[in-house]
Structures are given as structure tokens and as C-alpha cells.
Length: 74
Image (cartoon, rainbow, N blue to C red; front, side, top):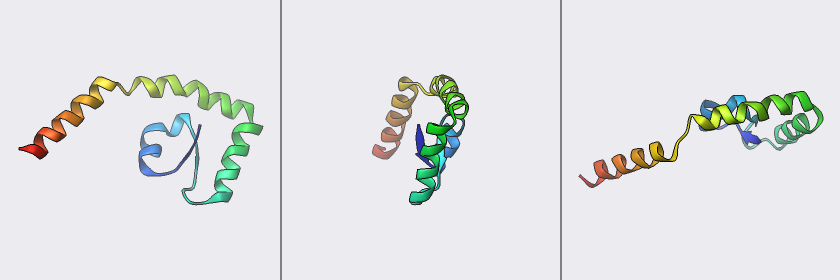
């Protein structure tokens, strides 16, 4: 995965994605080239993916959203 370096991506996914400078086309090109040309780098990112994914659960997300909407409605 290639993703922009916006704060949520950096905070939550940095070890599993190839980041590029947001709104910088050349940086995007470099990031894509990095994962296409450097198989070890791409594999390291791919291997980190399942560990990153385990940190997120739909039930946790749903509960957080429900709590937020309850506070807003109160």
C-alpha cells in the first residue's frame, strides 16, 4: 500500500505502508517505484500489514461512534 503522509496514516499505518508527501506528485511516483523496484522493502511492508490490522476491530469502532453520537445527542 502506498499512502499519503497525513497524520492518521503516519500514526496508525506507517510500518505497513509506503508513505509519500501529501500533494506531492513526485513523492508519490517515488513511493510507487520504491515498492515496485525493491521487493524486500515491499515484503517488509506486506508482512507488517496483519499486525497493524489486528490493532483495529469493528466492534471497537462501532462502540466509539455510538458513544460519540450519544454525547452529541445529549
